[in-house]
Amino acid sequence: MGKAIEQILLERGHQIAGRIDRGDGPGHNHAELANLKSDDVDVVIEFSSPESAVENITYCISRGWPVVCGTTGWLSHRTEIEALCAEKKGAFFYASNYSIGVNLFFRLNKVLAQFMRNYPSYHVSMTEIHHTEKKDAPSGTAITLAEGVMEHLPNKRRWVGKGTDTSLIDSTDAVEIESLREGTVPGTHTVRYDSDVDEIEIRHVAHSRQGFALGAVVAAEWLVGREGVFGMDDLLGE
Ligand SMILES: NC(=O)C1=CN([C@@H]2O[C@H](COP(=O)(O)OP(=O)(O)OC[C@H]3O[C@@H](n4cnc5c(N)ncnc54)[C@H](OP(=O)(O)O)[C@@H]3O)[C@@H](O)[C@H]2O)C=CC1
Ligand SMILES: O=C(O)C1=N[C@H](C(=O)O)C[C@H](O)C1
Image (cartoon, rainbow, N blue to C red; front, side):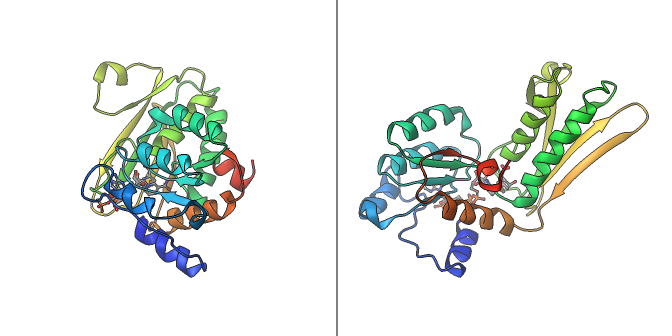
């Protein structure tokens, strides 16, 4: 994602003040940022790993830099990041998926869930397919889709990963998410409603990572000069 984002930033006439990667050990990557003056940076785009995102976001918000974060798999710390953002009067933007198409798909998913509310004979489940390098499962996008379903189907109260705990998966209050890892797949998400006699499916297929990268850059352009915690609904309009 870093490479795809860098290409789009340059195409849109932005300058890159600095870039970091894993580095040689804990703290090393931030040493590189420490050389930058606070005013050198308008906004930081953070796509790293579930283990490193919280540390990176904390560092940047503490320095007064607005952060656009796309890293998935760290959201158990979301409340503390939002509290830090409020304390520092900073700006933080998070989306599990920055592509416009997926954000339309999120809305379609909610509309479909609203329809299905009155048809309990249909069983909802999801499948996400990604490249074999992906570290987290289920994908952040699949979790957002499950949250959209739970918002509208009152008997669904949690999501579970397929294969993690059979006793949970069999329970009727869970949205089951199957995670498959295949080749270089950029991201395919399917929401399925099965009955004994038929099934209804909606699916989003990313053809490349360009849509994610462009959305993150547009979010970064939008975030500069703002204060607060934001997401794609703020950017795209409700
Ligand atoms: N929200 C969205 O739209 C999207 C989100 N994602 C998410 O973004 C994240 C990154 O994905 P992807 O680019 O494919 O992952 P990669 O593993 O290809 O790249 C991760 C990058 O982060 C660097 N990194 C790892 N640890 C740290 C650290 N401690 N500090 C700074 N940098 C670090 C890696 O450095 P090194 O090369 O040295 O290992 C690498 O450059 C994942 O969580 C993925 O799910 C991905 C696509 C779209
Ligand atoms: O790791 C990826 O590649 C992706 N991660 C995000 C996710 O976890 O949903 C977004 C996209 O699907 C690609």
